[in-house]
Length: 376
Image (cartoon, rainbow, N blue to C red):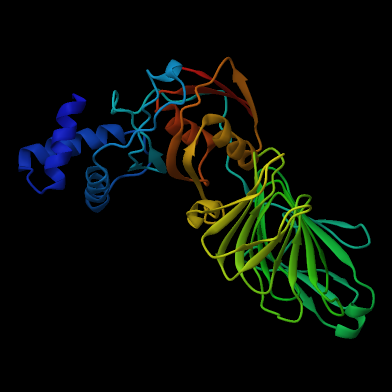
């Protein structure tokens, strides 16, 4: 069926002008696109998905950065809910392209972490049973049934005498949530670590050290500021919700504020005070910048999603590599045209790559834990 005919039917659907015959044609077209889904599609889901596509008209396209990629630069951002994920469509091709070539698929990441106690003992939280994991210097550490790590001060006097530092680390392909002794909640993304006192008793400030990415909901305590130290900055808060991305392979260190207020301390630069909805970015050899952003994009990972906003293949695949714990190998020159869309992180990597491949920009091949990327 020609793309022009489908577009006309979607336009009529949006305006409530389809007759029974045309509606049957449109539904048949949709089901053909979704025939790779392992789930049956109910009438309600079918109507919802068609409405989503129709109301997204006219198509939105991303312009290529270079004329070389003009042929495939108009990768559309229309999102079609089908099975486990969202499918990108090109205007030239309203069908899902050939599936990604794979010798074996790669499962998504999961709750995985290792806790290092003050005495150097390492505990695999992934393998540990629910309940108390350790007791150190008046502090008990428990793993809850819903997979959180919770610190509780049992003896304030003992805990405050000699500060004990713990470190929680997530591997590539892992994430974890921890509740610190003061009640602060921390979500760690893949390939991240957090070093913190096992108790904040007797300390003037609540300082922790972060590498990687974390979302924090800081417990309020006006007398004891909460400070997140990274290799590039310190973020000071009294009580707030914010996200910090410090991955060394990204082009910027980003701090995004959801609510409250934070001060970003930078060496050799003026402090930055962020308001909700603002993000600071630190790039090499450049002054820090502040911009208004969509905060949902910054914390999409915490909600179990990938959210791409005008990102090229290299930017997207860095996130994929960390979450699926895979090596990405590029074969030849790769288009720099950008994509946008939202997809669940909790599906096999081939589903994510199928969606990207359907844009007509690149193709993928999976061999073990290696993903090969090349131009179509």
